[in-house]
Image 1 (spheres, rainbow, N blue to C red):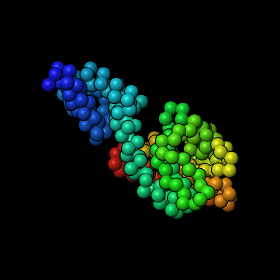
Image 2: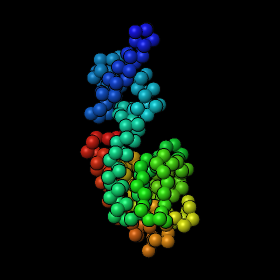
Image 3: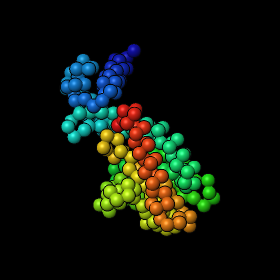
Image 4: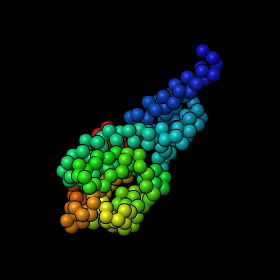
Length: 218
């Protein structure tokens, strides 16, 4: 094995050790150092680099925990059966959106079986605050008011004419991690997206948050 390969392996071993150290919960650099027997300076340097690549994230108190790369995977896996049930219950496209910088990213979607349907493929990005999920993830004041009043945020033709949506926040340990959204052609809306589908969207979002709490993320 070359010296370069050996150095790469040592780096991977240290990265793996740090990830193992935060598996059971957040920890400071010194706490990780104690768990891994690495120096505090090494842990701090590597942890900051891992944060840049979303393997870790840093809390406001300076502790490190598993980052968005792990949360995305866990969210997607936990969301699919919940979104499928929500689609079957409402008959409409059900999605999970997360914030990525100044955009929102469609992490998972289960399309309506109707010929006329609202649909965007997984991986689609939309600028904030477009749509009900965008308004929710952008933390608009009007969106906060709707959540406080109803538990959901709705949008009618604001992003795409003829389409509406209602979204509810997915929270874990009090932190917003995503938005469950039901998207529907306005031609099938009886009252409004929120009135028609809001309660069911909220229940799905709560279930997803509870599922994430159970597996210890984020």
